[in-house]
Image (cartoon, rainbow, N blue to C red; front, side, top):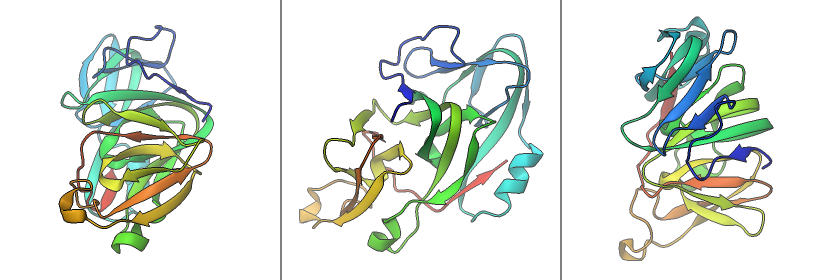
Length: 225
């Protein structure tokens, strides 16, 4: 993936639209005409004049056609000035997309540029293994996004060899990677800890996978404005 991933989690130049402020805060430079979608309740501070709309019409229209379940409530941020976002002390990963696509677990979404194309899509291969669907938020285009991780994540390059990930620890991956499900014996609980310990998803191709050091069983998924 050619997009820029700020792996050191340190402060980035103020000229960037989005950057890390420490490892657990995303700093976003809000500008007129450059709206931001952010997880509702994630604002911890801002400077200048910024407005927040927890019921944006465009999100209500899009969310109405998706499955019910645990929702990710989003708000629109507009105005001008630096905005600081966080989610209960989780690590924050900032990504810049350059005409690319990224698939992110809904529970890990923190913020993304409103002009990115986005939607809810089923992750291939999961239903083949578990009989249940798994839905992610897929972002496409050029712009910034921020996601969270429960603990310091590992970013794995998928170009050299197939990379297998416990589905409950999966944060995000480059959309368009080849996805291959794999089933393994539980071996008395020695492989993984979560509900997905008996199977994994294998990724290969040009891109990366973000994995958190925590396994959270994921319920059905919807997005709500």
